[in-house]
Amino acid sequence: MTKPVTPSANRRNSRRVAPRKTVKTECRKGTLGLSANLADACRDLSEGGLCLILKAPVDPNLEVEVLINGHGVRAIKRYGRICWTRPLDDGRVLVGLHFQGPVAFADVQNLTRP
Image 1: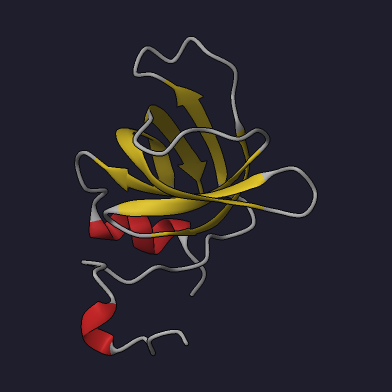
Image 2: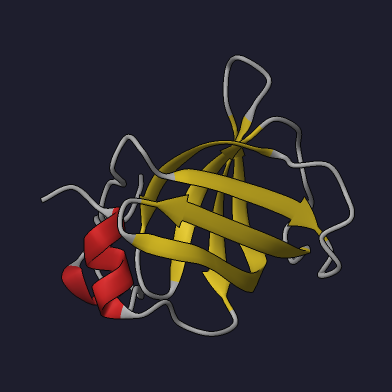
């Protein structure tokens, strides 16, 4: 039997919001930005992190570099760590990523749907 989720069980510090269709994300292993882009799509984002669909599986706790481009915002680069992974039926993987430093609230507002 699974334990029901209560509001106190949600440890997120900020609300996750779906990105605009014009938002493009890149996610690369390490912090040098030299590896291949693993990002396929962005599911949601917040000031503290984002949820991505990646083209290939990755290990939890992996350090990554993320680049976010979109409507009314100059390119945002953040370093982060993969918190969790979940395989999808088509071979891709859903991951939760926590940024080392927050994204400005105004930038999140510009990148997300109204």
